[in-house]
Length: 71
Image (cartoon, rainbow, N blue to C red; front, top):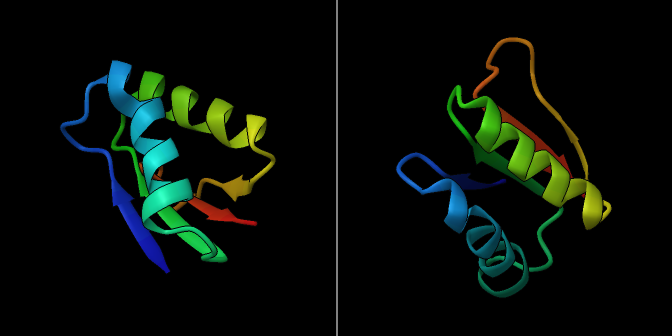
């Protein structure tokens, strides 16, 4: 499973980081973990991007600071 840690990434840069990671750096993987931390705005940006690109995802109840993604 690939991990993308968004700690320290500005909200304005998240979409570019997701595009680069999913489409250029790690394409073809079936499972990803995105570490968002506790920022609700960060989670919203990431989940909206995932929905736009039709990825399935869930936020585990034991760690609300990460999002698990599958194709």
